[in-house]
Image (cartoon, rainbow, N blue to C red; front, side, top):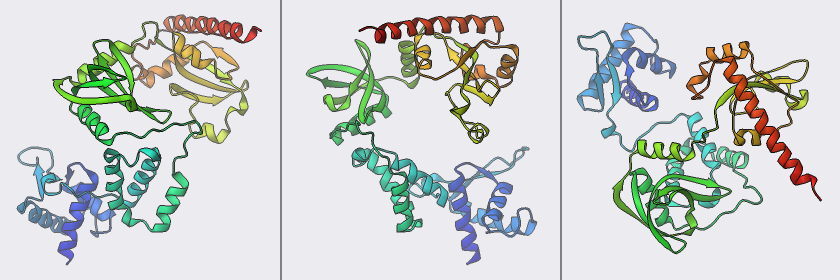
Length: 357
């Protein structure tokens, strides 16, 4: 019985980790799971090797490396033997439940999405009925009061997803017009689904509920081609990243939130409390988009970058995340001034708009 348990636990660990494990790693994992009595004893190692040999004999696991080289042997589950079997910890089941509860309720019945909920149901058996109800009550997504939702043709949605996943084009009828397009994005906005696609007229977004006909065609487009077309379409010439600082009122965040790494901007570098307020260092962008967003913030002050900020940015290798970012102080100051000029221009437009009778 002990041998059978060890064999089952080996398979469970390999499935859960979803990557090749060395014999030593596998032994430690089984020790942490309480299956083996020691993470490094030779006796337990021999028991584990016998179990692995039996599994390999029946082609349930495969091994790689470890023959004539310095790299240790690594073990993996033979996925062909376990196509419909997977293993999740209790914490993973809870996390997946919460994630799916964020999905809009009125679209959960669509077969493509239903598969995810059906798959989760197989693993939710580890949770009690009371625990499942608690998760639903606590994390069930509450729609916005003005959020919309429409009934969708589930066969149409299946065709769209199949076209997207196969990198194919489609012949469609949209609002009475028929044409060929290449879909690249599927997204939701305000409760409605949209397709972002290229056609002979360029890129545009199409409301899924307005699509009357969709038939995949043989023509294909690679992922690299999709990414290049999207980048070319949405590239804004006057947007260049730069570093700067801003100051918010003290009441914008508590000390605990600051210690916890609260982010005021997605491009924030760091934040700390000073005598003036909460100083935030971040990556900004020239052009009207970032300036327009920034006008909505209740900032007290704009501060140009300095050598200390540039040194920290270089240490964090921010160029890796923000292509085109410069570590030259003069260039950052030039872009900072361009940002301020654009913000002032937009602010004057707002004053003119709201200042009239």
